[in-house]
Every structure is written in C-alpha cells, then in structure tokens.
Length: 326
Image (cartoon, rainbow, N blue to C red; front, side):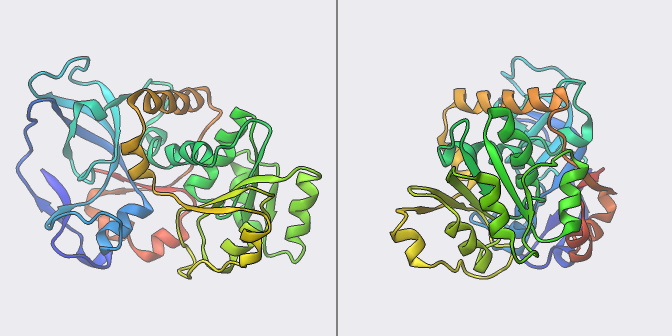
C-alpha cells in the first residue's frame, strides 16, 4: 500500500514522501481501515516539523484523523463489522491507503454525515467542546475567541450557541469575517482591523461580563483578549499563530483576578472519562447530522500530491480543511 512517511523532522513539503509498505494486519482488539478521506491539521504539520508536544519515533507516518471503512478485524473485536464506515482521531498514519486503529477508538458515523464532514468531525470540534468545559462556561455566559475563522473557532461559534452560550468571534479582516458568514455565523463577529473593535465588543456584551477567552494567536492580540475579560474570568492559550510570545499587562491579571491556562486537547482527552468522551462525541454527531454544524473543506488532494497539500502556500491560503484522498 501507499503511505506518506518522513525519516527526519523538517519542512513537511520537503521531508514527506510517498512510500510503498506492506498492508498492515490488525492485532488483537485492532481493526484495519481503508481510508476514504483524511484531514491535514495544524498539529500534523507541527508534528512533522518536530515542534509538537509529542514527537513520534522516526521514521514516522503522517496524519491523525480520517474517515474510512473497516477492512479487517483483529481477534476479540466486537460490535463492528467489515464495510462499516467509521471515523478515528488521535492516532498515527492516516495519510495512507490503509491504517490500523484500536477498536476502542472507532466512532460509527451515520449516513446523514458526508465524508468531507466526517473526516474532520472529531479533533477540532472536540477541542471546542473541551474548551467550553475547561473554562467552565455556563449557559447564558459569554466567551470571546480570536482566530475565529479557524477550525476550532468556527466549531466554537456553531456549537456553543447550541448550549445557549454566547460567543464573540474576532477575525483580522472583512474577508475572514465573510468566511464565518458563509457558514451561517452572522452574529457577534468583530473585525480587529477596525480601530474601534474593543468598543464594538463592549457594545455587544452590554452590562454583562465576559467569562472566558480562547487565544490561538499569542503576541499582542492575546494580551488584548485578556484585557476584555470580566472579573474572575479565565483565558485558555492553545496556540500562537503570530509566532510571538504572549504579551500581557499584569494589571489585567491582578485587578480582575483573572487566569491564563494552557490548553492541550490531546492530553485532556487522555484524562476525561469514557462516559464524558462518549457524551461529547454524541453531541458532535447529533449537531452534524442535523445540519446545525458544518465545517468547510478547503480542497481535496490525492495522496500522491501530499507535498503540495502540506505546502505553506496551500495551508496559508486555505478557506477550510485540506483533505487527502488515497
């Protein structure tokens, strides 16, 4: 079979190659999945660069989330059958024609959710739900986020209102705001290129205070986000798109008694109970199946074109998740 692998850490478009490998056989409590579509996430890119929190042993295979059909079952696998469509997230090697996954990680997907949505249903949307609970945001409260036109931001803007939670969605430009509008996210969007954007935020919330913030940008924008929190609020830091260290004014921490908390979804997923995990997965599937939650696709590339798909040009210009098709 064909699979995207790398022998060293570095620029993904330089170090990734398509190699021929024996089709893997599932061990006990494992299944082999024939890939339909696999997502390219930011953390996949960072992993290949060698800059992620967990470094795989080399040589390694790319990709961590996919939708596919069960092709073979290992011993003691119960509750699944060949040909069944499932999604898997948080594993290694999904940029391939086939991959192996633990049976306990499989999530059956109803026909009402198409392949393009299924291939990106878990990782980023799950992060959005985890963030809501990580920050203890209750119905009726406000949460503000930057980089709202990213996959986590779009997920938050669609999923939080289903819990009666109010979101303020910060984007850098009118073009980025249009991406939200095209998804039906038309309320409480604020363009930070406008000089009065903070005043716009205050006008939206009125006399209410903002309970939580999600910073994916870092640098000065992260500090500005913190300054908008109400007393006892908390901000989750989950990325640094700007590449700059988080710049904060200590007064915003001290006098409002606010907190900054690091957020790493893959680690939190190891800590939550199986019941909670199933509860969150059910919430995602129900919202996606009903059409209330839909993420855009930025393009589908053949596996043989993986170097183009992960290139800086494609990734920087994408308007949705880039998917790989074997």
